[in-house]
Length: 315
Image (cartoon, rainbow, N blue to C red; front, side):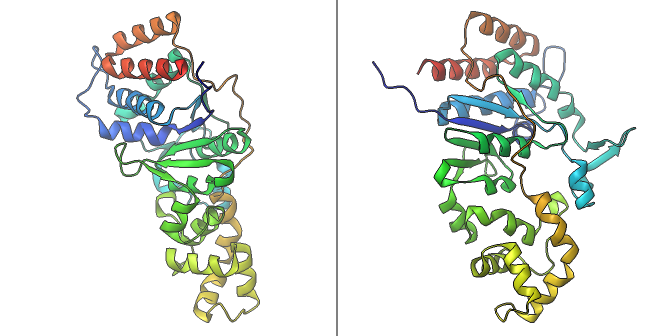
């Protein structure tokens, strides 16, 4: 009798992946009624490849119920501000997303539902926070699938939490461990959130500390261990911090008081899911998959995913 397969949870940063799918598959790919389905097909292909390559027993499609939470904006008003397309009645921010992709997001959800793959978000929290919460709770190894380096802060070799980083494309995936973070940045994974706070991130509207880039942030963190210790040392005129750096830290006082809570991924989002186990591809599930595949023209993308899930649950 074969040995039971080792457990592993795959946490999908869904928006990161369906954006990648949208731009990676030609927009000429359409359903029979003319609806664009390039993101749907590409997203299914991505999941099929991940299931085959990383052999999870469990999977969650983590969702942005709130892509720009107000509590983060209250702390840093510029947070993702450049990505706001408009504000609707009631104050909700609408993210600038291509219209052809916006139309496909409900179809992606419908397809995942038909297959029995869980979709989980949390009111007032981003997908990053959903991922952080499930990673913190997990009692098995975790692979986080994302193109967002903010999630590097979740890497924990002791708990077998890794990031599978998609920035170089699905054919060039990078598995991020603590060693990989040290090789890239010269810091430990546990220091990554402090590192990101100091460095800033224009793509998220986080200015960082002016004049402190990746190298100087890493040098400071290696010398003092944490952002709090760096701030304290600067305030005490520690001779290890030059007057120039001390002045820059002082000038960024307000930012440094607010930013850590914005940058740090939450690990207590209100999330719940009935089961994270990969769904069994029984006759009813296959029938639902076939119906939606025919209606949307998903073709071999649906076939590949159903086959990958069937192989994984039979192992």
